[in-house]
Amino acid sequence: MWTPPQRIRHAIAPTQWPTAEQAAKSPLFQPIELGPVTLATRTWVPAMVPWRATEDGFVTPDVIGWYRRFAAGKPGALVVEATGIRDVPSGPLLRIGDDRFVEGLRKLVSAVREASEGETKLFIQCIDFLTVKRRPPAQKFFARFLRIDAGHKARLAAHLGDARWHEADDAALRSALAEGDDALHEAVLGARELRDLRFGYREQVSDTQLEHVRELPQVLPGLFAAAAGRACEAGFDGIELHYAHAYTMASFLSRTNAREDGYGGSREGRLRLPLEVYAAVRAHVGSDYAIGCRFLGDEVIEGGSDLSDAEHYGVAFARAGMDFLSISKGGKFDDAKPPKVGEAVYPYTGRSGYECMPTVYSDARGPFARNVPLSAAIRAAVHASGHTTPIIAAGGINSFEIADRILRHSEADIIGAARQSLADPDWWLKMRTGLGPEIRRCKFTNYCEALDTKHKQVTCQLWDREALDAPDVTLTHDGRRRLLAP
Image (tube, helix red, strand yellow):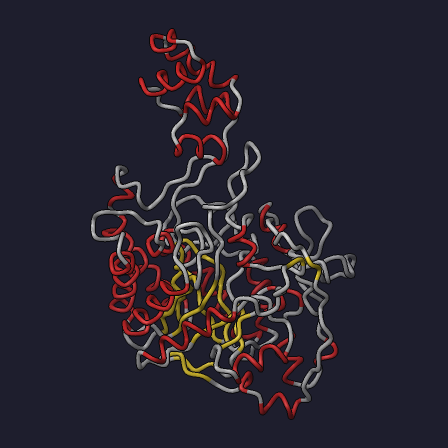
């Protein structure tokens, strides 16, 4: 992963944990309304992908165990991982694109209810994504995927100073490119072709020459609405529309969205589909079901959307009637590092990925609550527009002091903590009951994220080697780590 050039290692600062009496007076442990849903506390476990579903997208006992463990810590809200709204192969990621998935999701909901004694509200994050393929070997790319035209031959002739390439057959050209170096590839290939060679093929929302991409605005509202209906049927308290990071809906919101059909270009054009998706979902599930979204306060890419765009989007979402807004940052394909041959590009390896999940190796600002200024600005814009839609802040929050300060300073209304909750799923409960000194504090080395990068079952280095031989411990596929925190 990219790290800031300064690369300062920041220590995990000592902190003061509250007594039970002090915690009870903190805004962190006060209720808050998200439309029709009331959270008992302002504590939130964001969506994380643990790689525990079946290859067909079904809930497994390991999936249920994962969420049951977080629920035991009684957060105000728990968000189930990014769950695909299409019924298409997507590896061991949960799906909600068909009625056959509802039974397993219903069991997951029941497990969370039981483990939290009914306190934790459960949301499911619904996502759509476009095709991303593995990086091919150069020989395969030039032999099978490159469409040769006269322009390639002309550019190769110019680069090599040999006019005979104008009349060369395609096979000879493919062979020359396969054997060529980076300079030759950069001289001959177009920008998109060069990207496909070095990163693998990836669809974009602006690829309107592809019929299925051109028709996304007609297709996605119905798919999201149907997924929301299944979530409601399974018993979830609400859904979180995934409008963040490298995926379809975030790509519509991005300034890089150059569609010319009314669904790109201007801010209003970029907002059009996200608002239409929300409207379809709301119409399908009604006003008594909680719906919010997670979106980016800053894309952190060249030519991408920034905080001013995010403020505009936040106001539009609040005005439309969303019940909560969860703020993230970065995590884009645009600046990702080239993957190894045979692997797919991962959208958290560039600067935008770092800013999404900052580590203890940081610049002078450090990683702690690094992204909170985004939620603060968006919250201020939403309030200035006359709305009070709750805003969720996240990113590098691992102490009561930080969380309490954010709420008291009106920088957010709810505190999200993914990595810290993974380090100690009981940390919310321990704070509330005066047991703060017992909390395992996240070290922000992104050990967990490195596992996610390799599509391995996600665990935490602070506990995944403890008591491996205990009779009730379930191990990872390789038998080397425990799946759940002790």
